[in-house]
Image (cartoon, rainbow, N blue to C red; front, side, top):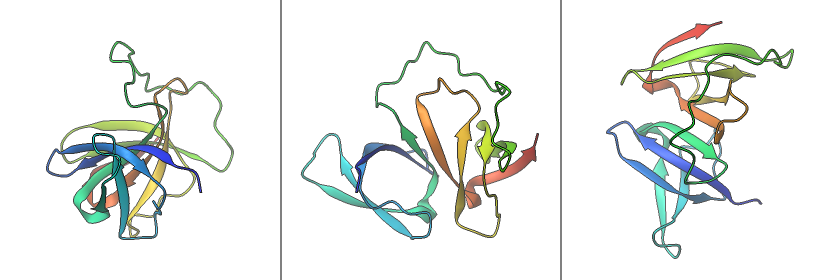
Length: 132
């Protein structure tokens, strides 16, 4: 199993970064290996989260202005959408499956140059979903 870099953003505003081997959208929790203390593992409960960002690297580029428009390429089986969280943050991307009665869904950023590869959006943190 491949170790994945992620940033977990909690509903209360906390942000934790680390690696995981056991994330599943069908489970209630996963384990995060901290960047600060690689020997320690923390259980992260999905119900406490806003979203999980799977990233290319942890530093990113603060100068980069991520685009919210699409480059024209969208797989046929995907839907373009804008997600607005209760805290006001908006994400734009595509999803293969959106089911509001599930724990969440994966959103792939509209901007292919984004540091974020995909986001697991936790449905209970979402105020509005708009299909584009």
